[in-house]
Length: 150
Image 1 (cartoon, rainbow, N blue to C red):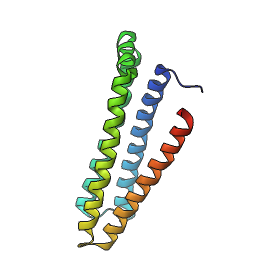
Image 2: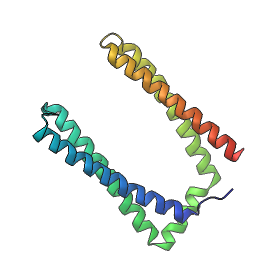
Image 3: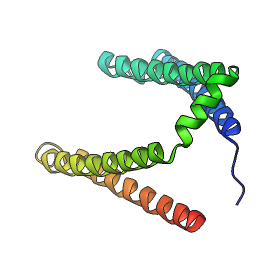
């Protein structure tokens, strides 16, 4: 099995952050154009949330790009980061944390879906669909990872 080197994975992360920023910028521009020309997003609260989410996504992607870029240019920090990230104990802790966070989110979404049924059936079905999608993604990745590494 061929795996990427740590530097190649960090480079991939850096470019993914740049792509995320560019996508967020395109979404932001499209939202502004749609509001001004197509009468979409006319509600000021909806438009404000749209702008906030777009800027947040842009900032997160740009920060990831810049932070990873600076890490790749400093060999000493890159080596320390590799040792920290590749430590088996840290990987185990991160895996367990991700697993517990996933299942806690699933339980909270179930509870929210139950209470959403009292207010909106559309919201209830959306949350149920979200739960279904999360479980399918989980099963697909479990199958892929299980086949590749076990």
